Image 1: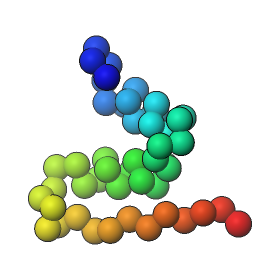
Image 2 (image 1 turned 120 degrees about the vertical axis):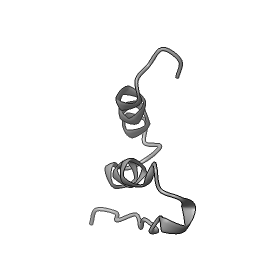
Image 3 (image 1 turned 180 degrees about the vertical axis):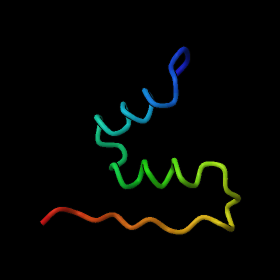
Image 4 (image 1 turned 180 degrees about the horizontal axis):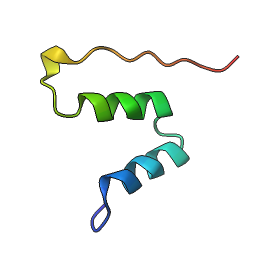
Length: 47
């Protein structure tokens, strides 16, 4: 994680199946909000 930018870390999390694109987008959108302002994210699995 050191000597790496946030975008690269997000990509690593996605590529290793740790977080989905939807979950990473929620992290991006909610990253600077207080906990009370964050809306829950629901995982949507492909059919």
